[in-house]
Length: 373
Ligand SMILES: Nc1ncnc2c1ncn2[C@@H]1O[C@H](COP(=O)(O)OP(=O)(O)OP(=O)(O)O)[C@@H](O)[C@H]1O
Ligand SMILES: [Mg+2]
Image (cartoon, rainbow, N blue to C red; front, side, top):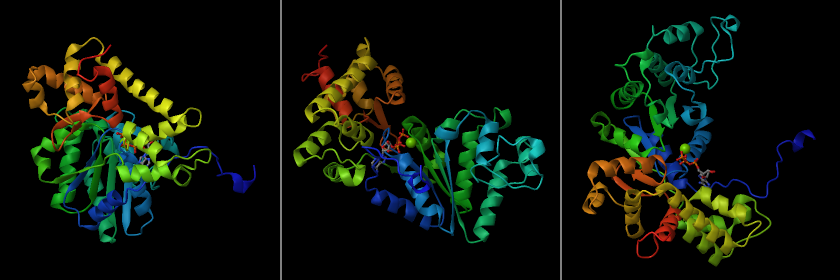
């Protein structure tokens, strides 16, 4: 292969990135104010939180006056507290200690460049990692550089303790530290995302965090953006083999709404199958997901049945429908963890993860809300 051909991978369907101007502007203005609050990004499964944050990261990473560090715990997570410190402080796991010169500065993510001496003492529990981070933030700020920390999937560390001390839960210490860095000393911007609605609701209800943070929802694409994408497939997805008309785009919107991953899936199927068939099969697949999830459990059916009519529901709606609170809570938790329902932490309401799931429910329950097996 010639050298200049190296990056020319050709696909019949590429990955699109649609709009998000409003969200990117919001993030921009967030870091343009002196830090005083933590930002929590939430939104249904696959609503584009991670992609948006990477895009934002790309935009600001090259700026001289911003020092942005991105930590994706879904990608780099391997387990215990020591690993967490290693990710945070960028210790290279591959370098054996005899290779390391005591004065060398290093790090896989370039997160915080520290001398080996400091790193070792921190791992032994002799130095407090938060003090070290704070010192780094101060150094940057003195140089006129804004530190921005982005952490995706923070719930991955929910069950960790610092130095195995059962009284020091890492996540609590992290939040205390983030509050100190934002509300109290205004040193660094902290942006956190999670796809776990329950984790975020715990955070939302935590009194220490309530008045020190802002919640921002990242949702699926709006209709206008979805239509723009579907009507211009060559431009956004590099599709040359087919194009879609207004009526066809409407049908896709009607089935999956602005859910990008599902749109991508439908577009991929259209190379080999007619649209109506693809959409009918997709709805059937969603019905299958509902059947598979409910199994023989009539209580699960009762909960999900409520969403055939209702847009969203809160715990009171289920109790009103005659269900017992503790039991419903347990089942709802299961549904959220299994990505059947989304729990909006700011409004404390539940709703089906996406538009396609509503189709699954409609097909499963039939028109009158009775399971049609
Ligand atoms: N603006 C966009 N336009 C088109 N496709 C997008 C856009 N944003 C994200 N996607 C696609 O949607 C899919 C889901 O995106 P992403 O993983 O960022 O969502 P998420 O909210 O982080 O998901 P999770 O809840 O699993 O953390 C990806 O395949 C991505 O390529
Ligand atoms: Mg994500």
